[in-house]
Image (tube, rainbow, N blue to C red; front, side, top):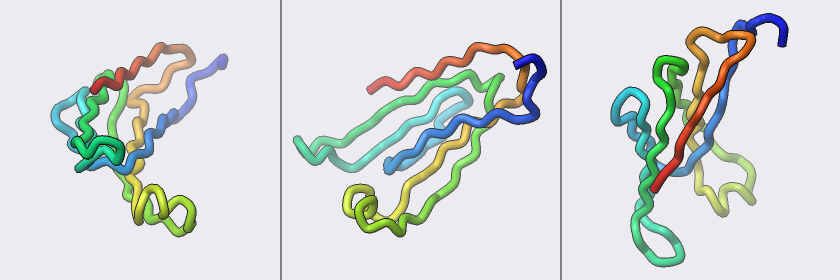
Length: 95
C-alpha cells in the first residue's frame, strides 16, 4: 500500500461467550468441551491503542453450521483506530 486505508477490520468468529474483560483483553468462555466435558476458557490479547472492538451476534440459517455451532455466533470486529500505510499488529490467543 502506498497510502493509508480509511478503515481496516480484522474479524474473529466464535461460539463462545465474549467477555470484554479489560482494554486489550477478551475472555472467551464455553460451558464444556465435547471431548472431556471441561469448560473452555481462552484469552485474546490485542493492542487496544490500535483497535477498537465491536461485537455482532450473527444468526445462523445454514443447517450444517447450526448442527455444529447451534443458532448463533459472535463476530468480534477489530477496527483500526488510525489506519496507516504500514503497521504491525499482534494478537495472542492463550488457554
